[in-house]
Length: 184
Image 1 (tube, rainbow, N blue to C red):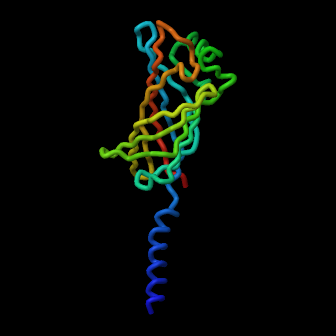
Image 2: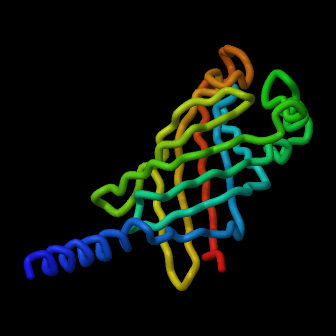
Image 3: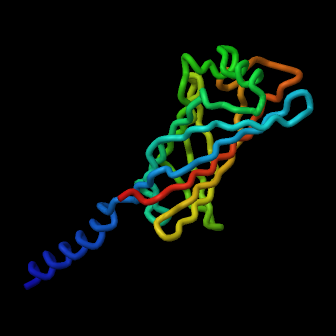
């Protein structure tokens, strides 16, 4: 009888805990996105954006142990509203879009904060150089749709984007908003 109770207890334990760890997190399809940046140049703030973000997002706000985000930004889509400046930024000295057509942001470690927001620990790869970045972000979900919103600051020199300059700031702030829909 004790053996039967033990087997039953172990079976129930594995069933309950196994279901937690075997459950798949939600995969999301990117519906639309906005990737923008701000940087000081000659005392003025220059605003820019990238037009295309693609990739894979597997994310569940509750079951964060198997979340992953792996997205790519098309570096050729850079747009500051000034064609001459955009052409200059696409060259080798800055983004070198011919050699490095994609910027990658990849992470699989996410911590939920007390206020319900998250910290994502990502690897940002830009111009072939990878650095760890921490991105605070929010995620809201309703009726099968979700919105990720986050912002972080990088030092452009860490990635070989331009050179030391007395005119151009070293730091750029990146803001990302991604609208997603649950993948069927």
